[in-house]
Image 1 (tube, rainbow, N blue to C red):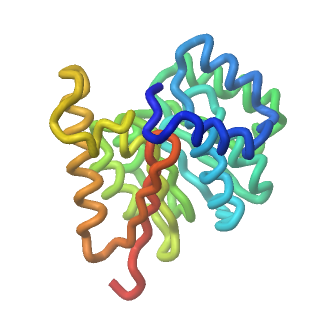
Image 2: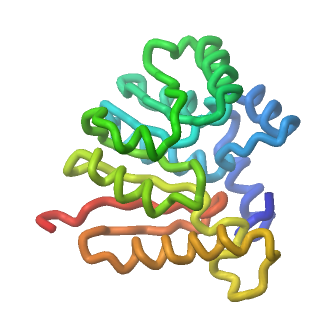
Length: 214
């Protein structure tokens, strides 16, 4: 994946993150072209999870279970529900979760994320969105309805290969994705009921919470 910052900075930050203990999953993802959160962004995600200590965490986009396992290891009291539509990924994720001894704390749900969000699953303290970027606006709106009052939403890939802020010059195949993410980042930054921070790390990470008394 293209970097959105100087490669030597990314490499340095990743060196400081150190070993995750999940190197076998990182190797599998690389060898099988499975997208997972970049290691520098993972460090920031885990910092926030460790600080927030959510009781219930929802992840949209499971893949091989890499980030779900990492978050569960970071916050041992957190119960995680992770949703993915790909049956093969669900099977692989559950295999990895069992191997990590976390089957009692991570539930993998085979479902379209939109369908899941439109159902009643109670409230969550933290929602991590790393699924289909074309639905980020819908995911946000529905996630807010499932979020506890002081909850936090974290969204990965919001700067998408550095193309979102890069003007109009980008490969045609990315046009829809870039357009969607531009609208998404503008919207979350302009909404008066939300407090938002966009961090240029990994592939771009957004942190979103409701403003108090709004």
